[in-house]
Length: 107
Length: 124
Image (cartoon, rainbow over all chains, first blue to last red; front, side, top):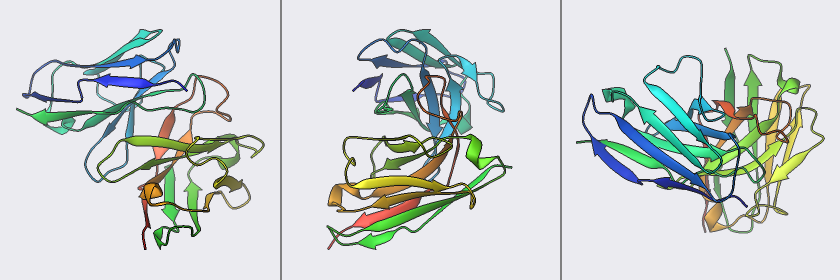
């Protein structure tokens, strides 16, 4: 099974900050990496698919990059509504595994 | 508008069974694979199972293989998860989600729409 490791597990940031979250796969997954945002008590929401494609309706301040084993999610200017937990997920092979999550909190 | 509505959750004793349903609308159900993802209280997301659009291929996480069965009725636009031999560690919110393609055999897949989730509690 492919293990997905996110870092950091949590971070504190201020509105307007640039935030970067890292996801590492235990083996190469090409570009088959997706990012989701989850707010408390809500279902996850797709942000980025296939490493860097922005899902329709998602603000352009979100971007994704990477290939192989190392990927990043960047929020260029953190907004109040972005405080949430972010998960990466590989779609290279089943079982489809998620990272442990990164909680973005208000500083 | 795509809508996914889960039902069938609740409290069940260890060793018991439960069947979850997910009613879908707003898209051509039979064209897309569907999946179940769960989240234990205070924990992260765990993929559980997926089924192809025509129901011909199913995949499972090792943690549920042999105990859970995913199925679908394309005439009713409904996805199911039959859960047997339930354990305390199966306690979680269960989400159904639409997959971006007809199967999960390609890497170009992602979960683009999610239901609101349904709580399953396994406890005596």
